[in-house]
Image (cartoon, rainbow, N blue to C red; front, side, top):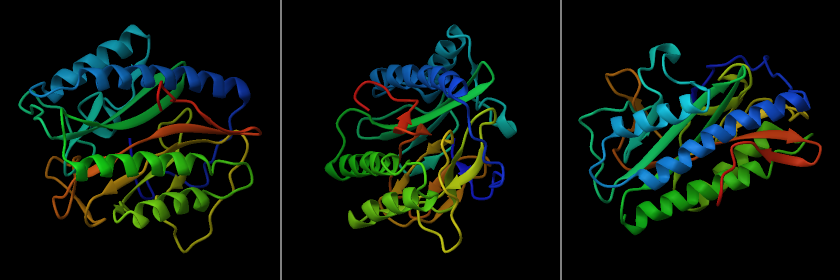
Length: 263
């Protein structure tokens, strides 16, 4: 789940011990299993409420707690954002997916005291080439960001990897919402913007776990929040895509805790 800028205390960077990272990997693998299931399930005419129910049921079967449900009043287990919706879309029995939509699905769990968080964007049936390219560029920008999770580098190296690749491809990165540290809280420091800021950037420490999540728009980077208080949409109503992984910084390089087959 994306954090609003300054939504977490940048001073609260909490490095994790190896045994904690293993527990976080267990949590994130429940998330990964859920997203893989949803990716296979998404099809035209299914409701976003149906997807939410499937995700919550699998989570509970794995003895985990849906992380988003009740978080600051969010009413569901899954964030489901369609087309111009960027993040934090609320599932509904009235929202049915249509062929040609793109659906961003963000899911998190709490398991044995630790949080997992990951997101994917899924095409619904056959989508047009512009939307496919948006998905591909967003996914690749996350891969490039993950490669920067090296002990001693800076958070700004992650931000720069996303921004450079996205803008080279003619898209824009959302600035109002950012990635975040994660651990025993869903949102910890540091903030992980998808653009380079003109301010000091913290170094990446061994044991830091980061939820890196490019949110990429086809048009302007500007967004607004709908009257439900949650759903974020692009200001120009053009499509947006979102991918996220939880990644641990280790002495051997980045460890993607939420990895699943193929990604």
